[in-house]
Image 1: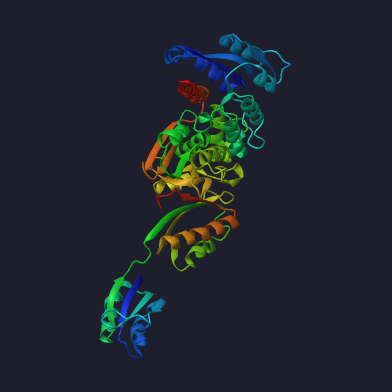
Image 2: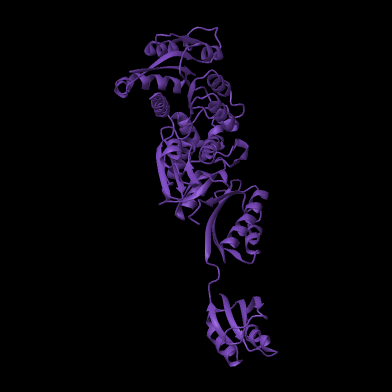
Length: 337
Length: 167
């Protein structure tokens, strides 16, 4: 049995989802020969450290009751640097403009020789190349499957399963909130504001929906896909972005009569980086409804490969994080053989 | 109806007028004439390509007249615009002069708006338009689309194109 000591930086929905998945999957992990021990948890105001492993259920309970996970005083950087562990799970909230606090957290972890698994898109929006280079220079692994498409394993698909293929283009729906809003507007002839309110009530859209509905969230995911597929140092500002706020139920009705749905489509190729509403024929694989995420990868050898999955949710995101952790564990195991 | 015709003329002076006169004579509207002066067909004749608009029922009469003038009608193509694409516009389409928006495409000469469906929910509300654009080649379609894009941007209309490979 190999012990992997990890810290969880950020203890909101995703951080707590990771903890829940780790508890739930203990037996599965044992069968894989790995014991994941959480030795530190930090939220924006406090931290909790226990070299023998934190009592995860208790940590969640404390966080829910008091709003903080532990004691104030230590900075996140101190926790990352000074706690003895192997891997940092960085799950703080996304800030696309500055990339912080994720950017500093990830760099600190890398520089102190720790592997990183993150669900945070913000740090990659303008610093993908810098982060990957830092990881390489320090001989650690940085994995980010959870940043794009939630549970849908698209990064792995591009990097590993389709290795050797030339990726000609990727088309996808990478924002479940927009897809839900457009689906509902079309189905029930709801206007945009109404569908947005409904999505907010169901917890599908955030109180400030700007990132989602303006296409910013999708654009950030597109940047990560472009870098993964082409390693071309794409940054957020390279993407042409059109959101969904101007779409009307009448327009959707008109599209429907002519055999089309309207979906917020991300298009990635070496020439095009765009997020915009597009007409999608009803029978097209990308004409999905609800909060689903979906992407079609066009390659020279495999031709079209389409993948779909649940794009958001704490457990779904935690699933992608867990798979990245296991991947790193296996890679380390292979290296020590 | 738009007709595209490949004609072959004898290599002697005064032949082009024998080819064009019958078209205007039966009230056809000539849009373009390409006279391949330097080329010769295997038969030694000069190829000419003519594009014109004409009532459908006059076509047979025209061919008969051309042949009577000694002009060989090598090919008659009724449909020139075989690339097509749907696009949608959302915004104050009518207030921003829809005629002008359509003209932007039509004036390219090699693409045109062939179908238009409008939805106008109320005077102050934004409208939507679903358009079908036809063009002679893919390149012409793309350039028409580009022009439409610029027009839409200028008029602050949201333009929604089809996803790639479904054009």
